[in-house]
Amino acid sequence: MNTDPPQTSLAASRARILGRVVGRRHELELTLAAVAAGRDIVLEGPPGTSKTTMLTAITQEWGIPLLFVEGNADLTPAKLVGHHNPARVLREDYSPDNFVAGPLLEAMQQGGFLYIEEFNRAPEDTLNTLLTAMAERSITVPRVGRIGALPTFRVIASMNPFDNVGTTRLSTSVHDRMNRLAVSYQDEPAEIEIVELRSGLEGDGGRRIVADAVAVTRATRQHEDVRQGSSVRGAIDAAMIAAQLAEMRGIDPATAEGDAGEGYAAMFYDAMIVALSGRIHVDDAAESTPEAVLREIWEDRFILEPHRAAPG
Image 1 (cartoon, helix red, strand yellow):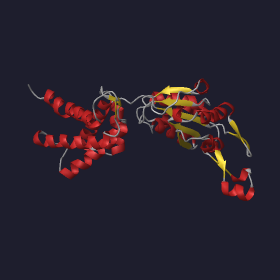
Image 2 (cartoon, rainbow, N blue to C red):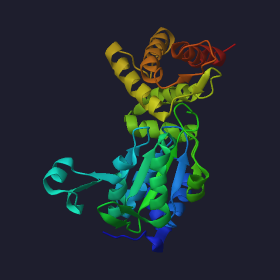
Image 3 (cartoon, rainbow, N blue to C red):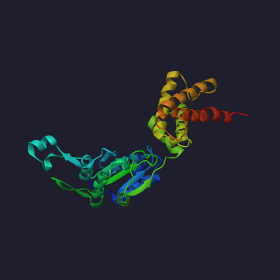
Image 4 (cartoon, rainbow, N blue to C red):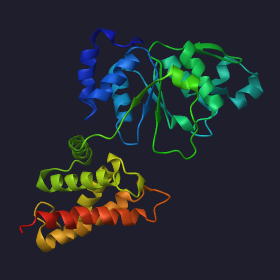
């Protein structure tokens, strides 16, 4: 395995990686520059903004593993670092041979990226274990010894700025050791391209469904009663569900106008309820429900907008 980042041709690496990522040229360039410089980084943004896609593309380009860890209250240092096999300890006592490496040690030993989602949900003592690994590029494990990291080892973290429930404020020590990049939602053309790619929908009917799915999903992020709207994953699911409903109900999205258009609109509302109602988080102070919000968004898209566009 090549244990050094491909420093000789970062521009070529960037070009190849961009072929796997939609609408993230600037963010990808900054992330790639940070990890190529040997730095660790926090990607701060809502779910569904291609953070994992960027990291997957970089690690595939470098030929190294990407190890996922979910940050939560149960992520103890032992779960992150590893533990001795209890059965073998009873038979053999403690030894390096019966130590089971956790994701942190696996990433260090394999020169991979340790990707911790919901970073600010992890306990403080767990984060302190990471600080040692980031600062020294090694860690000392009792009864095992010192474990050094290969040169391509990085700690990558993600946080959702819209979700404060169950989170903790990161210490100055953590902020001081990690770079940070804010990753927002893609623009509408990029999201349309993503949904087209992921849904596989084609033709005039497919393009209509995709455009409607992206429009209503993006509207959930701007509604005054919504604390956090849906990511592009909601648009992908809405488009795919709408396509299946259209086939079952004998609706051709490419030609559905007039009375048939009403059937298409009703079909799309059903798809929205299934795909989006669980993905939007209504503000606690708002006297509303996800279904009511989606109904309002649906009316704006399928009743008011066509009415405004009609002659006269």
